[in-house]
Amino acid sequence: MKNLCYESTSNCLLKCPYCISSDNGVMEKDHYLEIIDFIGKLLPERLVIGGGEPLMDPLLKEKITLIIKKYHEANEEPYISLSTNAASLITQDMWLFLRNSIQCLDISIPSLNHDIYAQMRGADLLDQVLINIRKAVNYGLNVRLSIIMTKQNYNELEKLFEFAAATNVNSVRVGRYFPFRNAYNVKDNYELDETTVIKIIDDINNGKYANIYSGKILPPIKTLSMMSGYLNVDFNGMLFVPNIEGKQLISNVHDIDISALESSFKDSQPKIFIRYKEK
View (cartoon, rainbow, N blue to C red):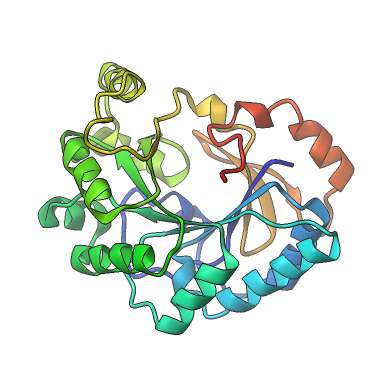
């Protein structure tokens, strides 16, 4: 299994109207021990820990520590990417833990404009995000900025690359707004037309921003079907892949046949937009 996304908590201090994981509901019980045992059996090449907001998960350190232990017991090293909005206060102890425990800090930032940020995030916490991006770089983490292009912010791409260059982040991932899961309900407000998306992809692939930002740029994926190889598990232990209608439920961590699961994803996984382990 190449890619697994663990949506570890429903806690979040933002209220993004297009938040895809809001369809998980509110966490009443955290099934993390069973989920981590499942991760230990699967040992995905790349594990993304998201939310909600994982940095608001009071058990985040314990979860990551247990996950790393599972890999080491199998004589393997994990590749853990923490997907965060970086809008919360982060202690020095947490920064040091992340530096020593994860391989990528993926920070989502939709805009450098306070009004647009507040519109897309439900609150204006942009200043704290900018502070945390600089701190993450200073602490020596492998920092990626993730930018989801929507009707509101796609004209800011050049400014965001300039910011990425100025802060010396390691890479930038440009995403496209896909109307799936909860985001389907507000697609008319956010989804770009296909012509605009293709132009953005072509501009990136043709090096339009190379003179602004010299780091790695991951352009948008072209179709939702390319995400079919990305397995998700929520805090309830439910396994699913995203689709336009919401979730295609597969099973749960208690009942799944690991060998059958790996076989079913063998062909679809290479299609996923992240299909390598970054050095």
